[in-house]
Image (cartoon, rainbow, N blue to C red):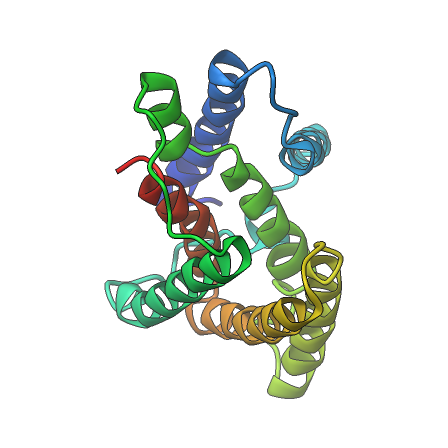
Length: 215
C-alpha cells in the first residue's frame, strides 16, 4: 500500500505536469512551433497512467517513483552533478551560438515560460522511459544485471541525442557528456532506489538555462 508521502508526491507530479501543459497553451507564442517532443511525451504519460489506473496498478513500482529511501543526503549527491551538467550545457550553447546570452525583453509570458518550461515534460518523460521503465526493475538486483540495463538505457538514450543537428565536433562532445550523465543518473537512482534523483536533475537543466535568458 502506498505511503501518504509517496501518494502525495505522485498526485503532485500529475497536477504539476497538467499545469505545465495548460500554461504552455495559454502563454505560447503563436508564431513559434509547439515543442513536439513535450507534447508527445505528455500523450505517452497520459496513456500509460490511464492504463495503469484501469488495471489498478501503481506507477510507483513500474517507474521507480518510490520515496522510501530518499534522505537529506540526496542533495549532497545531486548538487555536484547539477552544477557540472549545467555549466557544460551553458558552455556548449555559447560555443554553438558564438555569442553570449542576450536577455530578451521582459514580459510576464516570457517569465512564466522560463519558470515553468514545457521542456520539463520532455525531460520527465525521458526519465520515465529510460531510467524508469528500462531501469527501475534492476536497481535492487545484483550489480551485473543493473549494469547491463544501465548500459542499454544509456546507449538508447545517447543515440537519440546523437540525432540532434549540430557540428560534428560539438556532437561528439555532447555524446560523451550524455553517456557520462546517463550512467551517473542510473547510479543515483540505484543508490536511492528511486527515479526522483535523475528526474530532478534532468528537469532543472532546462529551467536554469531558461532563467538565464530573462535575468
